[in-house]
Image (cartoon, rainbow, N blue to C red; front, side, top):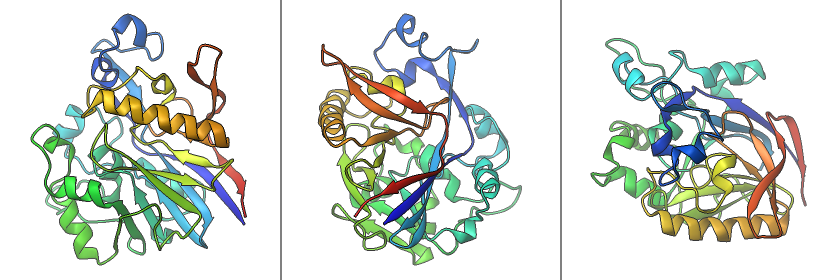
Length: 291
C-alpha cells in the first residue's frame, strides 16, 4: 500500500527561548535558534497531511490557528492573523472539508487551535473540518477536560464541548484507531503532558510525528527539554526509548515546531549522542510504501 505525505505549515509563533529550552543556558541554545530582542525564538506550527491511510485523507495536528483575539494573539507570539493552515492546504489542492480524519497528539492550543475557525468580533468559536473524525488519546482528553492549574492556560475552554457535540470524536485507548486501521500505530508519552499521543505512519522505514516529545532538531539531544514539560526527567527517559526504537527500525522523525525542517533521519555517534541527518525542509507527495 502507498501513502503520500505533505508538510503543511500553520501559523508561526515566537516564544521565549529560555522557556523552550528548559535548563539549557542561553549560551548553548542561542547557537541553535537565534533569539530576537525580546529573547523569543521562531517556531513553526507544522501539520502533516497524508493520503492513502486506510483509504482516507488524514491531517496530523492543526497548529495554533487563528482563534485568538488580537490581544491574546500578541501575548502568545502568533505572527499571522489569518488561518495559515487553510492557505497551506489550499496550496496543495485540499479544502478543510475534504479531510476525513484529524489526529491531535494533545489538546494544547498550539496543536489543536487550528481546529477552530479564525476569530471574528462577536462570533462564537466553531469547528472546522466538518467531515472529519477528531482522533485524540484518552489520557490527553481527560487532561483537557480537567487540567492542572500549571497548564490550564494551555487549553481552549470551549474546545472539548465542541468536539463532543460534533458526534465525530474518536478517543484512542490503545495503539490503533478503528478510523485509521493498521496504517498508523500510536505510542504515548507522559513527560510533557499526560497521554501525549505519538503517531507512527507506515511502520519500519516510515515516519513518526514527534509532537512535543521532540519539537525540533535541537531537542533530539537527550538532555534538552522544555520549561513547559511536566516531568523533564521522565521525558528524557521516554525520549531515549523512543529514539532507540525509531533508530533500530529506520523510522524518520517529523517535527512540528522546527522553524526550518519538517523531517530528518536519526543517527547516533560513537559517544551515543543522537542527532539528525538528511533533513528535509518540506514534503511534497513523499511516498511511503508498506505491506
